Every structure is written in structure tokens, then in C-alpha cells.
Length: 314
Ligand SMILES: NC(=[NH2+])NCCC[C@H](N)C(=O)O
Ligand SMILES: [Mn+2]
Ligand SMILES: [Mn+2]
Image 1 (cartoon, rainbow, N blue to C red):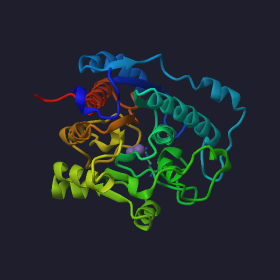
Image 2 (image 1 turned 30 degrees about the horizontal axis):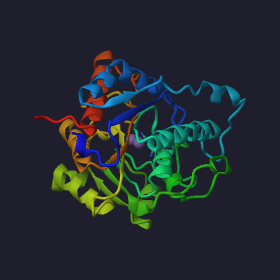
Image 3 (image 1 turned 180 degrees about the vertical axis):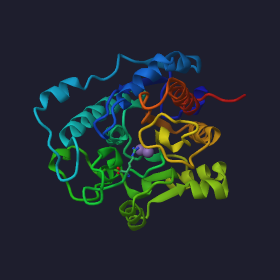
């Protein structure tokens, strides 16, 4: 595997960024996701794949929440100051790991965290592209969001579309619409569909996965954001991209999702490019289902991470 990860120097080091955070959405428990995934043994599992793994404990966001005496909505946006400060801290952590030549593996927590992870990646790799695997587009703006849950909005902040919220002024619009590609979409709000069209953002929904098969879809997705296969890749994987029969324990499950193999294939194919520089696994919520479903979801989360970091079938 040594030669495969072009941007990460030897010894290949992965830095686990554990983010027990749920403020981007209303359901308790998603903050337990990273704790369960580490408890399930992700660190020795990655070490078995030949990685040096750094982990100095989960992030503690308590001091941020404690410092906010109140955090009233801004427009419809819920917990805006909390989400902004937490994701800014994550951006700094991810950016520092990238700077150190390490591959940050951010485990959520809700998907608002990607505002931080992708900002961190782009601070060190301005030319990076994003592969966003999700049932949802998470591209609502201040104008289009219905729920006000910021986990449904990080992409619009990264692109700099929609009206600006001063509390989020640290987020630089460093992502270009042609530098992100989606795979797995099937629950996209009307306003989001319009944004995707208007900005010409490439998306492969489950319809395309059915039509072309996952192999072709990943190839087309990479051809779009990375035609010469020379740009660093940030893979942001929302576990709800998988079908709820495969990953039941998540806050916004949507039927008709990726199979176990389709999800893993995406991770394997991205790893094979040798261009992966950052990885997110988001929205594992261990409190939503019975223990068997939770264990299954946590185990799938671990195996997606292993696939993205070089586990092969043979
Ligand atoms: N990261 C997620 N699971 N996002 C779900 C977003 C759902 C919906 N589109 C919203 O904006 O509220
Ligand atoms: Mn989602
Ligand atoms: Mn998401």
C-alpha cells in the first residue's frame, strides 16, 4: 500500500479527529458516534492496514457550549454560534494534521462538521476536490432551509452561496462548484435541486447508480472533479448514504440507498486513486435503534473507513 497515497509522506499517518457533536441537528446521540467507533477498535484496525494512527482523545466541545450563554436562532438557523465555533475548531485541527503530512480521519457527529473538515483540507490543499457521499445534498442556504438544521447546509457555506451570516465569517468560500461531486442522493429539497442546477453541480443520485452501476458512477464522478487524477481528494461520507437496512442507526434515514458493497466500492475506488488526503465519516447515531442495529451501523462505519484506507478483499 505504501506507494498508493501520493500526498501522505512515509510513515503514512492517519490522525483520528473524534468529533462528538450533535448541534447541527436536533436528535441527541449522534455525538456518541465517534466514541462508539473508537471503542469498536478502529485504531488497531487501521494499524493492521499498515497505518501509523494518531489519536489524542475526542475533541471536547464542552468549553465552547459553556462559553455561550445563549445561542438564539439566526433566521431559521439553529445553534448557529455553537456550530460556527465548533466547526472552526475542527477546521484548525484538520488543517494542522494536513500541514503535518497526516491524513485526518474525522468521525462525527453530524454533517455540519464538514464545514470544518473541508475548510481545513482546502487551507492546506487549495486544489482539493470533494466526493460527497450522502442521501442528502446538504446544500441548503439561509434562504432555502426549511428545518434550520445546519447539517443540511454545510456545502452552501463552503461554496459561498446564499446570504452571508456574520457569525460564520471564518468560513472562506474556497470550494468551487465544479470541485464537488455527489454520489447516492435521493432526498433533495426543492430549493436544493434548484441550487444544484443553477451552479451546474454534478450529482449522481441513486437513479444513476441503478442505471450505470456503481463502478461506472465512481469513474464518471472522478472524471468530473479530477479528470487528470492529479488533485487531492477529500471524501465526506454520510452513513445515511447507505440503505437503512445496512446502516439503520442514523438521524435522517432514507430508503432506497447504497448497498453494503456499493458503499464500500466507493471507498475502495477512492483509495485506489492514491489521491485521498482527508476522510469524514458522519451521522452514525448509536442511540436511535436497538443494540443490534447500533452494532451493525458502528461496524459498517468502521469497515467503510478501512476500505477508504486500503483494506482490500484479496
Ligand atoms: N446531514 C444530513 N443528514 N442532512 C439531512 C438534511 C435534511 C434536510 N435536507 C434539511 O436540510 O434539513
Ligand atoms: Mn445525509
Ligand atoms: Mn449529510
